[in-house]
Image (cartoon, rainbow, N blue to C red; front, side):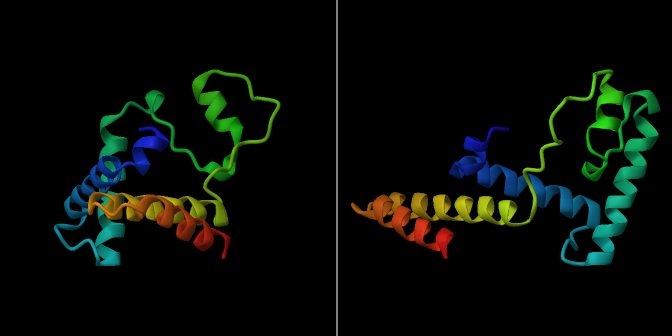
Amino acid sequence: MTDIMLFSQIGIGALNALLRIILQDWTSNDWSNRSALLSGAAVHNAHIRAIVPAANLLEFRVQEGWAPLCKFLGKEIPDEPFPRANVGKDSASRLKIAIAVRTAMIIAQAGKKWAIPIAVVVGGWWLMG
């Protein structure tokens, strides 16, 4: 899935629907229950470990950096730092951008002539603040 698709109305809707299906499956439709969610995730992870051969499965934590990923893929470790695109404020900024774009699309669909320029200005102001 591309970043553009994530910001499109269809992409956000599809991603939301997929997440809702997964959470409902993991928690027997009680996806707001934290313990049910944690239990469901543990059951899912155990299922994946049971069906995927160990040689084909990498359980990876981003904090580990390049080494385990490169070893698993049979590649050399790059001479650059491991990318950390979803760190703190960066993740929040991406979410704010997605919300601003989604809001602009909703307003635009309502047929407002100045919707996009206003949404861009308000969204920019919101991101800067």
